[in-house]
Length: 68
Image (cartoon, rainbow, N blue to C red):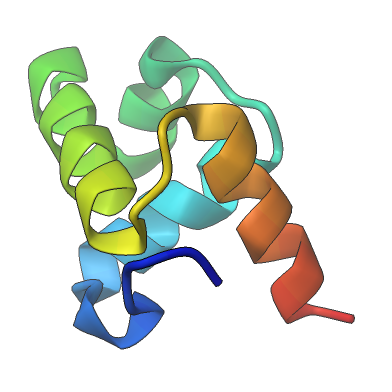
């Protein structure tokens, strides 16, 4: 894993990351979790920072590797 530590993620951030790894948009994640798009955007920013990755694609790859 890059610089970050996935154990720092909150339970809600894990939920967002799982949907993000399914290549869902912020709007789709917001609808699925009954959140505002702005809240999802904030969660995604925190996830990227905590995992030490530059973008959603890298975060999704980390999620997919977790299951292997």
